[in-house]
Each structure stands twice: as C-alpha cells, then as structure tokens.
Image (cartoon, rainbow, N blue to C red):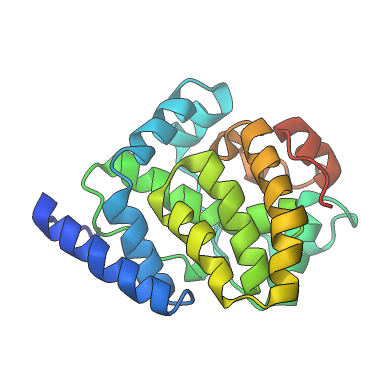
Length: 220
C-alpha cells in the first residue's frame, strides 16, 4: 500500500532533488526518506541477504514485526528495570519527544521484501540512538549516521555522515573528529548486522549486554 512505481530516470531525479533538500534541511525527514529509497538499490539487497542468512534475521523477514505505538506496550516497557533495553528505549523517546509512529512507509521501493527491509531500518533507528547513547540533536544524529553508514552502506547514511558536521560548532567538530566518529566507525565495523536482532524480544535484556552481544563498544 502506498507504493508509487517509478522508472530509473524518475528515481534518479527524485534522488537528486531529495538529496539537495536534505542537505539544505537535515530535519526534512520526508526528503531523507525519499533519498534512502531511491538510492538503496545496492545496499538494500545486501542487507536482505544478511538477514536471510541469519536465524534471527530470517525470522524477522518471515514475521515482519513493526515497531509502532500500536504494537508496543509502553506501560510494560516503562516498568522494566533501569538499564534494560525496553526501559531505556522509552526513556529515549520521552526525553527527546519523539515517536516511532513518525517513520514514513516506503513509497518508491519496488520489491515488497526490500520495502520491508528499509521500513525495518527506519523503525530500529531510535533503538540505535538508545544503544549508542546518542541524543537527537545534530551531533547525536551525525554519530548515529556514521555508525549506520558503516553498518548498512546506504548512501543516505553516508551523505548524512559526510555533510551533517558542517552545521556543528568548532568545539563539537573537535569532539566529533577526535572521539565520536572513530568510536562510531570502529563499532560499526565490529558489530554484527543491526537488522538481525529481534528487538521486540529483547526488551528485558540490559543495554550493556546487548551492546556486547552485537559488538558495539562502550560509548566514549
């Protein structure tokens, strides 16, 4: 539902236009979403293949769970112990005043399974913030984008990682260059595929334990 068939030329035009708009305003999530869909032709099949060859990832592809307010028991997650994935995820949502329901459904991905892969990537994005301990300000978003760029290979993430820092102050740029980006890159390379974790079945797991399992180094 909502799929809009497009030719390669139309995808290229959409990619160019959305890239320009996203660079002008990184908080235009609609343009970032279009950019991800129209430029992910190589990265998305690779991510799908990684999921298909992993037991947990394969089960996610088969069951296609969704992370939305309608599927989350927020009261239960809020009642979990401090430090657990579920409790810290809800804390992240509340502290940053964000909602999982703001993730747009894909429109320009022609393959249904690949459309789910990019939908899943979008819906676990806030969980990446939670696991990496990063807020939703520009500095936090850039760090998460560096991690996701290494993990996914999505051009949208690479673009955000490369051009996001231009809006940061000199002090934040120093912290980014000397501490946060090297850590994000090392963690991205060391971590197993972030789409192969069935997060909905890991709410009780401590964040530190899940970081260690995935291969994310402790935040600096």
